[in-house]
Length: 226
Figure (cartoon, rainbow, N blue to C red):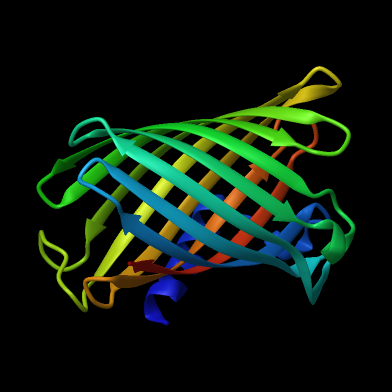
């Protein structure tokens, strides 16, 4: 698709890297399906499933399933701009590539503001990532922008752009603190009032303060209101 080609070119230009020549570089795909339900004007719930798979690793192209995530979030709107959320996630990985399964608990604060067609948001998350042998505490801050690509209002059949940058800090008494950074750009289409689809790219720098690993994610998702 035209928009996806633009995103790929943009990412290549921004990072200026010969990506596939790096031994510490991987490309993964992630496909997700989400259900959103508005319980009341101030309370909503979300359920989602995401599948992640390798496309390029160890300097060769290959498809290999990596994990499956099942996620739930409950969100309370404090007012028009502020909300609090609690989330729980289980990651199935051991049966796919031998990695550790994970139970994740999340507390989130979100602030959004709209200026004509442009909406921006600040998100703070605190996560407890519970593995068999240890628990990792992770703090996250994300700044995001989204806006319609046709005019000031998103109508059915039209597209929109979502871009974000996120910083992450992981800590545990048994391991050295780890810093990560993520940059994401996605194109979405509003299919109808209940559903939309998104495609995009995410570039991750992991363990920046230890030994940096770089990962490119190809993202696809379908979001349905019920």
